[in-house]
Image 1: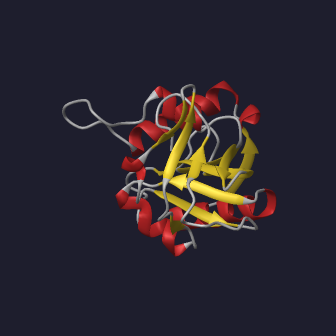
Image 2: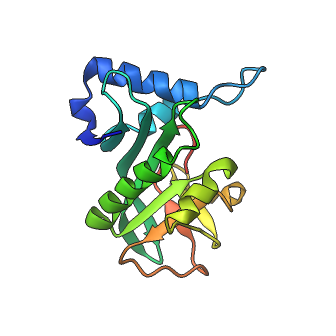
Image 3: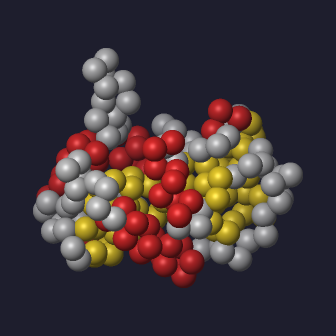
Length: 182
């Protein structure tokens, strides 16, 4: 299956609708209506570049790389933040997620000082196979109220150091956004 890399602006309305349908199918809400892929999470996946598997109007797989600034040891690092990695149910387990991540790795290594992502437990093994490491140091967020620790995210944030020296004794601090910060 062919992979296509394109910016959000080139998705168009139909492409955005098809992408949202894929993400809703890949991340369904549970029986109580909890979980799922909410509007804030969709917004987080926009504004960067998208790696799509399959046709634009009916994608089978997707991953996005969006620019963020993460602070570490007093330095604002240009970070390729990975969002909305998904493969349509029924197509999972065939290696498509690995192909998407190989292209994501190329994009991150080619344009950023650091790669980062928030990983669900079920996806962490995929990211580790591609060289992403769980961040074992402290985590925090730069909020409207100042820097706030985010200890509940420990173990879910993964990094791909490109040329940024990272010291796990120092906090990794994300920028502010609505919804999930990491």
